Image (cartoon, rainbow, N blue to C red; front, side, top):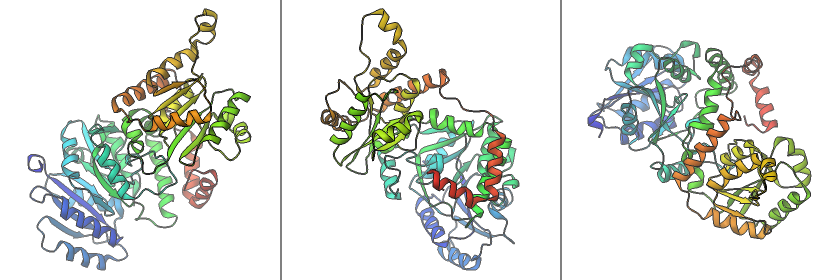
Length: 484
């Protein structure tokens, strides 16, 4: 396959992290067809430049597919990439910028180039990875607290990659593995030096070419493992990220809204729920959605379900933000989460009683690939009932179209049995996609999902503050549970 496509120059910017670089070079030796493609190793004179240079030359030897160069001085990541692509590579090839802390999997380059060749409007392609923000696979997980070893990503990607579309349009591509059509470089240059020494430069490039009609896409069937965050130590990395995010939002006020829209709407449903296709433990994870009115009967049913759930059925109670204080008092010791679009997914979602808002429906859609409805809206023939409950009835019709099981309340033990049955049911990708798109379309059409095309002065000010005080921001995020 590789001989029938355009050749690629793989540019590997080098700074430090010799062990990661060794793994990367070894992977390239094993996966690249050097009769078609070439590798340019660009050493940016890091703190151990001579040691790294000696080891690199030992690894590649006289290999004709590798070219090694050393900058006269440290240029930073942006400057190193620009010099390698704009000055040193004279081949006219398409260019793959590949971080030195990556490990490409077999077939990655053929797959990425096939995606690039599939549409002349595609300007940039990136692979999927275990550590690549919105290109991470899986992005949302059944158990966010557990570690995600590379082996897990490889297994899950192998199980689901042919269920995914070959590519997905994304607002930006991730710079760890960044394949650029040569025409883009010829027309638009490469990275803006304002993002030197690094962070945000690839996002700016993607948004810049998009203003001229070119897209960035994820190659869903290509996998490249990535360590990440090895270039900038201490406070420098967080400070650069926050400062450069501010620059991006000033240039492209719609950027945050575009990422949110991508996550909420444009991803394939199999991608959204990938971690549920091949569970990595013997636990069934359940999202128990409660109605808007936490009556005594609802509270009793939730408590009965929590009591009946054995150790291998882990239940999280999903409530509205306005219910959180009441829920904590009613269900002491229970796992409670606010409905919405979290980074966690579940194996099964339960609607416990009537859902009356599209927000509840949207949260259910984002939580799990399988649904159980408990005491859905009764189909009363009286017009007085129909008029009074028409909104809940419309939501109920949507729910029934995509349910796995409807049931009346039969106690916590009976519900646990249904949960086990639903979790054992194989996920149908076509039905899942239909549900995902239907509910997402409703959420957008009704104004539930609104993605801002502007950025507030408050956010820009917060980013500026964070860039100057990264440790304070890290502490605030740790306290609020948002992570570092």
